Length: 336
Ligand code: PBG
Image (tube, rainbow, N blue to C red; front, side):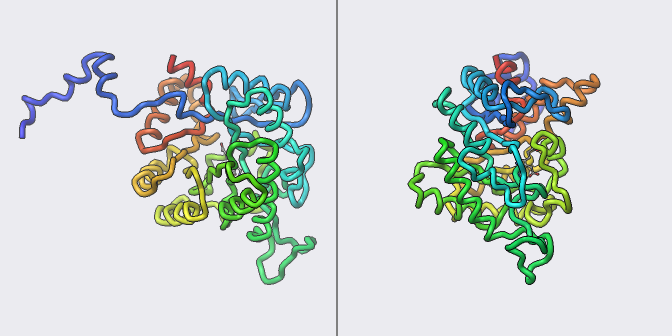
């Protein structure tokens, strides 16, 4: 076996073209999924303070933004809704004229080729900010056998199925359940199929951790929980085996695409899932990952483009096929 001085790895780092030739991982526009936050109104483009460069859009301005994304070659957009009104059951999530069904119809009418992914969760729609129905004393669903403020799992499944059919009917190509509710993928698959939406895919937030990195998003989606946190349904950041179990369940229930979230702090999970499962794998570079880079760059402490691209390459290197990222539009410019 030859070694130094015969072998000198630096030979293959001599210039940009040599480095390009031996680069092992690629990042292309094909890998990117952009996001849009939709709120009621007309002509709205309201900047999100905690996520510089991002805004909440009304349906009309969201359509223009979706056209821009499609023109840039970005294949897909993930939609989040800020409803007209929040209530205990998050009814706007399954209202056919709710904010997201409206947005889906308008975007699909204007840019039919853009893949529309609907984030399927109740936290943006409930007045308590949790991802489903809650066991409270004043609720008609109150169950004294369960703890107070417990997320009612199976009752929430029913509503997730119902809302998914409404979003599919509006034209969503992919439903992305993000609530970490047990059985959510199976329940949604069954409802979609029995309503005739056998072609609508499911991208499951399969391994979603209870993360502080979602901080800026809760500002963007106006969805912080009014009591407690999400640790009773999202995963403990310390767990790996449990992530594999979560994904096994979602695979068995029919998830077409698997997702890990957040991305950079959980690259070991991405890699393990890539090695173990043959379904397409997505990673979500979440709001905190984005805003940390933005904030440090604004201070002049980090080079935004360099650090963002390095992070995205790391996520690809770990094995993600697709990356949901708030840098999507920037990446298209940087790649050019
Ligand atoms: C909804 C949802 C959240 C995010 C995506 N979907 C918030 C949460 O779970 O608390 C976070 C995304 C981000 O931080 O960029 N359940």
